[in-house]
Amino acid sequence: MLKNKLNIFLLVSFLLAVSITVWLDYKVKDNVGDIAFNDKIDNPDFKVCNENNIFQYYSSKSNYQNGRKEIEKELHETIKELTFEKSGLITFRFIINCNGETGRFRLKGVNTELKDTKFDSEKLQILQNAVQNLKNWRIVTYNNKTNDSYFVLNFKVEQCKITDVF
Image 1: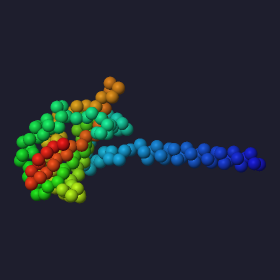
Image 2: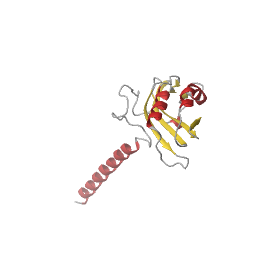
Image 3: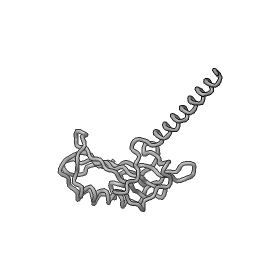
């Protein structure tokens, strides 16, 4: 009788441990800030190579050929024509896939006190289109294999103009 109760207790404990392990694995699989496909705003033609292994921008060497200064140089004409009503930061997060294509753009605007703010959506779209048209992305390689990665690009707006890209 005691042996049966012990076996039942061990079985229940084992099943509970397996359930918790599977649940935790499911919960920690995604990282904070991962960009899931959204059919309302994302281009369905943009494909990542491995949805479960997109390198974070801070742990990869994803970048633009010749660095951020080259981005600023290529975006110069667009940047100099844009004016904004307020100062702050415009941040684009997006994915560079293993083919060097970009997609799944997400945007956040903050004012000079780092509080969420909205910038003119038409001007933001012009800026996003210009970033999407950049073609010389350096693809992340790991173990001689190309990989997808996230990238963050910030635009500093001061006195109605973009003054820095970082």
